[in-house]
Image (cartoon, rainbow, N blue to C red; front, side, top):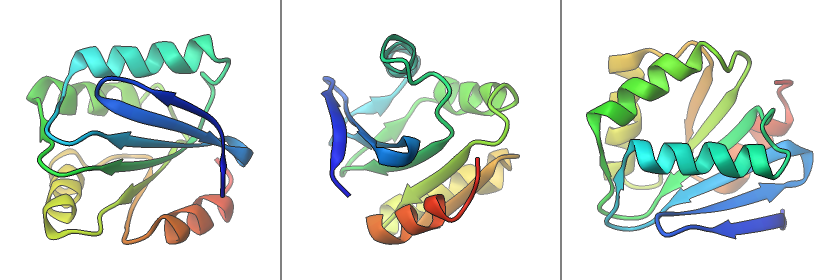
Length: 129
């Protein structure tokens, strides 16, 4: 599925696809932090995509996550009811990171882990956000 819009940031690539699906790829060697979180929210709001509900999240190698970022994700989830999040985790390291989030924060929204982009897209298309 080709992206209709691609926005490249210093720390991430945001692809907006048909059907309101957003694919965020965190770049290699970065730390997910509150600055990146704010930057992403500004992109959604400025692009008219602030009501997006379907996300695919992937990360390149050696990505760290700041504790404040985890906590913000948990707190902001209550304001984003109905969001669907597909995590691409083709490697052991990304699966550990994704499962860590599931176990510690127990997200209320639908959150699934997939090996491929195609599997994630099919799941998102089959669900209504």
